[in-house]
Image (tube, rainbow, N blue to C red):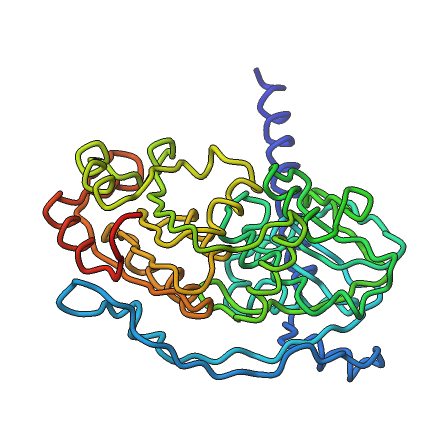
Length: 389
């Protein structure tokens, strides 16, 4: 017993020493400064001149239409916004760190633009508590499509935040450039990349368990933030994908109700009760997650109207001809993100409406939505839809 206590004390002391050493590593490896503009950094560090891709832009939007008595502040607060200029610049020796695509410049400074801005760095564990990971040197030219949420398989963030980063860069990248992508791509992600001309031979799959030191990273900041759209980038993405599938947009008059009945959260709790009303107005029920990527593109390419609980399925409005009527049914807890599909609809020339639903709590999960038949009927009657074809 007497010998056991000193052994335990020695083991405890060793563990404490390791913790202190690890804390010193984190403290000394955490950058003291943050780079807010890679373009400016390159100019002052003897790098190549940046290629200007997009000018800065000030946007004014129209309020959405609604049957509510007042428009929610989530919309009114974004009636005007600014989008920064966009550029492309080669950086030699930059490091790619973590699944959110944090870029660390050769002098150790993290590029805030790689995760949207300096405020987001405080949410990045690879910045706040950097861990020792094996660094692997990668020869050649790279463009990163590993960004916030791109590895999570979220359809909206992939289409809006990730794929639009390709807009405008293709003409300025060396032909042998590899595209860094999340390691575990879902089928729709692989399909959409192929539709944009990026096959397996052009992909470099990155899972964040290593630090990649890239010979040349061709860096471009995001086109826009989530919840703000640039029409030119949306249209380019749409046109490239539709041309790949040889799909021509049409006015087939299809009215689509996107069901979330197979989703684990944020469903329409009384879907069975209100589906007959949607049917009377000519809406067909579709579970978008049960369709292939091509099937979703084809379905929405001829849509006249779409109704859904606020969720990623609305992203497919990207493939609809201008003038699509959109009804966004928003459960109250989602109102802080209500603007997301409104801004997309605005840029694409669609007619966006919203209605706030009731709440059906689900213990341990995000609440479902519930809408009375009377409320849905009254809302549908307000939409600018002609007779059912």
